[in-house]
Image 1 (cartoon, rainbow, N blue to C red):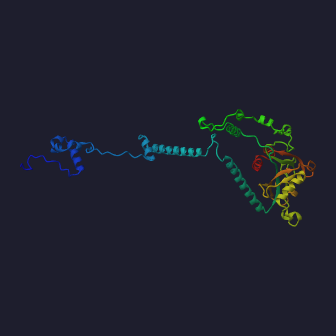
Image 2 (cartoon, helix red, strand yellow):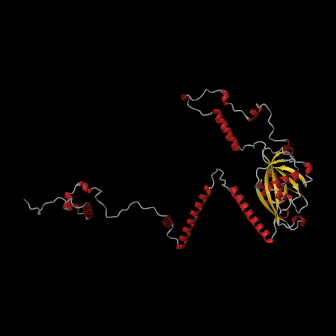
Image 3 (cartoon, helix red, strand yellow):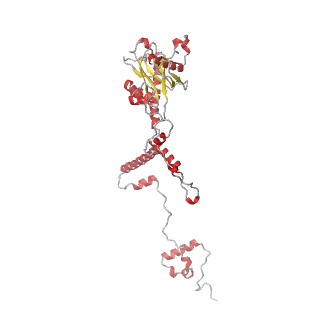
Amino acid sequence: PTPPHKNVTRPINMSFSIHQARRSLCTAINSKLLLQTPLANNITTAALAPSLLFSTTRTFSAAKPKTAKKAAAADTPPTLSYQARKDLAKQKRRDAYARKQARLDSLKTRRDDKTDRGILKRTFMEWYSKEIEYHAILERKARQEGKPWKIRVAALVERLPVVTPDMEEWEREFVDLQEYLMTFGKVYPPETGLMPEEKEEDHVVMSDEEMLALLPFTPAPRETEADATGDVKTRDRRLKTFLYLAIRTKNEGILSDSPRWTLPSAIANIQADQKDSDDAFETLLQTAQRAVSTSIGSDLTLWCPSNAPVAINYRVYNKNLPEEFRGKYYGEKIFFYRVQWDSGDVDEGSLAKGGVEDYAWLTKEEMLERVEGERGVHQAKFFKYLL
């Protein structure tokens, strides 16, 4: 036999790793010696598959996304100076912050008209916090001067609405939709057998006038004669809203000679110089009831829902007030009690005895208009939140 070491093409030793084979093939291809080597005559076609061959050029996976800072640096023109690139990056950060704040502001609104949520609450708290701070200042000044406060109680007499208020437009649309659904109901396919036999009287929608015509009595009008004539001394007016009893008097110790519109009030008999008297144990609610009876007579019957006041206000005495009125007091603390009309009416014969020149049953808007005209916007805002 021919010696194995002479002119014999030996088969490829497949024991070496596939990595070595791929490197050998690539080296042969790049040097254009693949057809001149014995290795090419003994390798299979499958060995030349692209999976076994690789280029000497390095390949990488998909590039990772750039961070925001690197992306901003990449977008910056290379021709700009260092300060210009710095200013551009700062402007981009400002724009991003502005977009974030605009988004947070848009989250506060959930309505179609884009009204701000809680605006009424914030408006009240801004006014209330300033009032509390101002009252604390007055308390401190009174302690510094060593003067006490006189206690006054005001009665907020209200007449409840007699009839239901008019519906808003969206309420009327909702009621109309409910009536439509109750009249026509749901529609099912005929083959289900769920649809009852239709009748003409089942689809009749009556108007309000037709329904009122079927009543066995004539309903009272929602607008009274007092509304037409403008009479404010009767409770038979503005039946859809609250009415408040207001009096025109000078008993509160004002500087001007002309009286002003206010609520019935009286000084409480719980002062330091009245401890030994029989009236020293009068409660604030009893003082409110006494204020009403002394102002407009005792014919008015009231219902008191609570023993606690609904509000408190401070009044500092002006130095120009008479000394017999001011006394040794720094001012007044006015406690407001809400009471409701139950029966009876104003005794006009008792008005002069109580120092009352006029009275009226006013709505909230009418009361605010008169208070603002006589005392200014600040007191009108207090009455706005009080009523």
